Length: 162
Image (cartoon, rainbow, N blue to C red):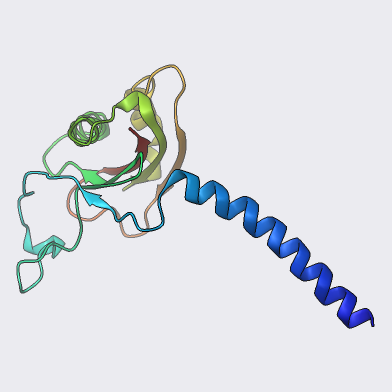
């Protein structure tokens, strides 16, 4: 009897939670909708990054749209300069990608920042501050063990709405 009652309660709670979560998700994005790749100019291919497979099929897209969301792949800066120069250039690249996708820096919801060295945190913040409007997005910042791929001191990706 106890086991049967527990089973009924479990099903009841999971159906309530499932209905609430599922209805919110289905309202945001149709079940049969597939991601739309945003057309971007081909990035320079560097063997060290292994960006292209043997069949010339890219390993990732610059950005992808699904419903009213746009997901922008990590951007880095692979030239000379300090953390402030690298951060400025990375933010410019993020902004270009967002505009191509029909969004903007003010519509960014989430940013992930990957630093080559945690000692660059303060310098990165000096350039980053205010770039996303009056209501900055949520952000995660980590120093990457082994550093950011290539010669970039910082890499960033983001999620925005359209």
